[in-house]
Image (cartoon, rainbow, N blue to C red; front, side, top):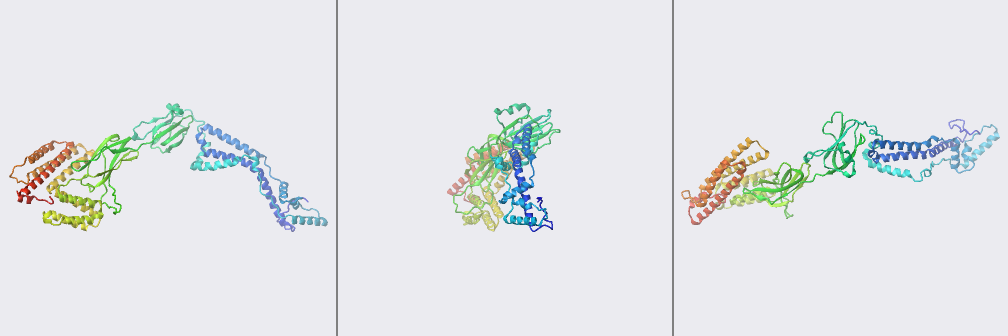
Length: 637
């Protein structure tokens, strides 16, 4: 017996060739199992060291260490890895006899059955062959399965504290914690640029606050390097949104930031021969220049930009001509850049009603700031909303203010009735009320049509003037034909124009319109900062419009109910004298005085109308001048 395994492909093999093949395969498995048991403990040590290196890298330790410490740490890990690999140098591949012994132990049968089956007979003696064949058949009959068994490296003997399991848990945790920075953090261990940094490299750093803060840059260079390195100095307070700029005059530049510091692209080209990095400071954080080495670590405390505050300084006031005057107080740490008044309909208390469908958006208009960037001040804005469809409605007023950082503040809602133009004519007042109802809810167009139809009842008593009656019929027909929101808006505009015509007796309406147009043109020019020549032209036009208004007031005063031949009563004479005085002032008035003069002229107009009604009532009671009153009766007067 020479112990040589026969070739399974040999055509001269005897009947147990299949058993020999299975035995050969089991022998190979046994060899590999023994080799794994010998190599795995040493490989496990090496993999544990590699896993610990990845844990340290993914945890970001290399990013926090200087370059020299990185080099030392990497050398330490390399030494541990070499020590873990050293036992592998004594690794010996398992021999055939060791594999057969493993198979003998795995079969569970005495007298080494696997070794016996691999033996061969070299003698040609017939008796010896017969004995050899009988022995093999008996061994094959007793051997059910030849197995090498699973490898048993017995790691517990080499690692009784199960440190490999702890490293595995930390490896999984840091893998997810590192996120997309895994490769960068591992590569940081091999970045030693600062170890041999040249001595003539200069590093400059400064913080540039946002322009709207008006604060100067803060220098962080070598001049305050010692102060920045002291923990007692505390973080440097800078406005949120500031930009940290680090510039190096040579060599590579490596800056590590944490917290609320994020690298951004430079807005301008860097000077030739320098390296520069920009970081936006949005929250508290730190910055450390690691290359070139020897730079301090700066800590920053980002001061957030507070939202502005705005509130009414006093309740809104109604002006003589129906304008709305708002007084408000504004505060902000760096200054408000814009403010606006927003008006909305007051919510109704009856939820059972269908939702309203307004034809117009609620008015909103910008507020005048005390100065370009108001940090603390009281502003005042006068806005004429007398012609707005929302005039006279119950609304909620809210003031808003914004700063340059985008922060917005809102005042407490204020419930009020929006000022409106005062109409003394009863029919004009009725038209304006129906106009407001239609403008604020298009679903009530049928109700408005019914109201217009009611105003045309008994025209010989209520609307004896044919023009008024025809105007009402035209409005009713226009409303009945309206099928779209745009058509309804045209009805609203027609109702306003008709009401103003009735109130101002036609001629005065054109005079008032010209005056308002001239005033609005001058006001817009002053707000946009027009040139001095344009201001002079618009001021002259306003003076001419004011003069026309005064002439119209004088004309209407002369048409008193007592007849032109009778002398003026004392109160009318006083009104005319005042009109003449205002006309003289208008010729020399400045742009600031024109608004006040216009208000005084409106007051004169109201006095004339009041006197005219009083005189008319007295004439009716005494049956004096009946023919004159018949000629002067107007729509709804």
